[in-house]
Image (tube, rainbow, N blue to C red; front, side, top):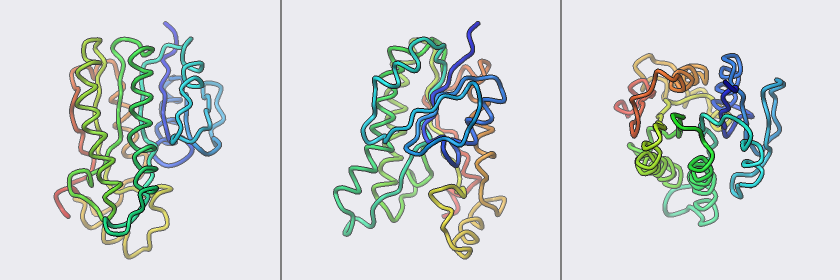
Length: 231
């Protein structure tokens, strides 16, 4: 059988990079999408450099049309803006374009081109439930779960599992400028009193691509280590 391909957004850093490397080790072919250049050098890795504000659908289709497209993992995300009284419309719109609209566009492509019995995983956030200082970010992550619940109905007819994952606080490109006091405070809200490493979360997402993980769809996988309930 042809090597299975997985499309992953946000592969130049953080969680997306960790997932891509783990899946390459497992023998998958990876099509990575990121606004930044790739740091991965592997014969089964293909990089599409693009700004997800404007998803270049033709480029993605050309890259996957002859492959055995099995999975889509949406990791790319931004946290733009401020509180509701200060946020600009441009920051709100950019957050929605990258965090939600791009996931919708690629899911539309998957509806036509993904193989039966595939996997779609949208990376949300506990702040979709608890809220956050930036309503643009928490609203966009809540919208991802709404997208999961909706498209799982259509994809389920073909055996494709669609789920949302809620990672706990991680040190990634989005959060690596946090001061030590903030890191310590947020780590203390988890049951293990530490921040997650991208590899912690990536391990679970990679297991969700197993063929045997075949009877879970329209679900939330909570990887927040209790921090959702500790705020």
